[in-house]
Length: 494
Image 1 (tube, helix red, strand yellow):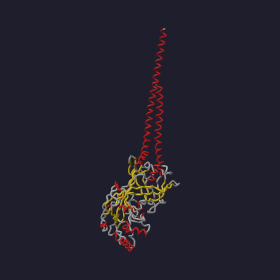
Image 2 (tube, one colour):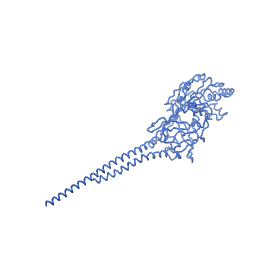
Image 3 (cartoon, one colour):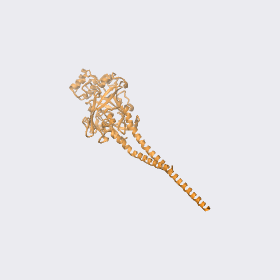
């Protein structure tokens, strides 16, 4: 029995050593295995079924919510009074995104066009596309500012043309018409005599050029050569830099296309991306750590300097001519129309902008932009990008449609594009990139603890077996000596 216990003890010691060594190996090798799997699954490659599908057809729910600033006192505005607006909406559209014309290149890049289509969601909206709202007429008030320095007679002629075509300073139309286009004799006239001045050749609408369209030809790195460059833009429409702005820094095309980022992020990382709609590169900064539906995340937000003017943030001087801080002048990429973008309700902008318009109330929870991202893979988990479209308007002599309008940056609409990872893709993502790495991490500790326990148990069992053998050998020796003594005594008595 003692010999058997000794063998069992040795066996436990051997198994314990192997388990402990395996656990220690996993401590060092486990992270390497996980990182290799992350690299393998984040490279843009048709063989990567899960990540390639996420990149190509964006399977998560994605929505655009649009809010209109309904003008309540249009007649009074023409007399120089402060504009009063009321927020209407949201009018929610499901956004379908699909990449097409995908072409892989030998230099480790891939080109594609991303097409977007919008479908109205009545159940998610507060109102319907048939709702009627009043907003400034961009074609009239925008053109008036653009022609401010033109000869007086020409301005008179333009004003007469507006009257002939019955184009006033404000539009009262349905949400659907304002979004996707309405018939306009002025649009027909401009397209006939000034082709290219307007973004579309058909009906004029705020989002007419968005629906059933693409965002341009993107060429991005696949990450095959260097995983740190995956998703980063190599060129857009064949350009490696823009020509809209005044400095090389502002004209740079930085970061990704805005859907995914390189893996292995840290709290010092930022989220740079190029936005064709904003005509520039933007960058979000780290705010805090958290989790989304059980998946660890980093939350990134827009810095206050994003739309700051040149006097408050020198690097933004190239985006000028500027107005108040918090406004980005996009006239250079919007056919010179006096259009500005900002965060909704002038959030993070110069407070003076709120004094010029009544009905605005900015707050962080409703009006800030954020992206919650899985830092290990660079995959966004929860996204809300929020922007506001504003029109700079003022009185322009000879163009009587402008009346006595006070100089103001007038909010027209704001919209939010949001999406979040959900459904089967969430389960797959959670299993492969959260559960399995966690199991592997705990396995290494289990093996180490199990190895130590088996090692100690085996050593104790082996020691106990050896002691039993020693004690039994001692008893046998004593009994033999006693027997010999009895034999000698017997001989002496004889």
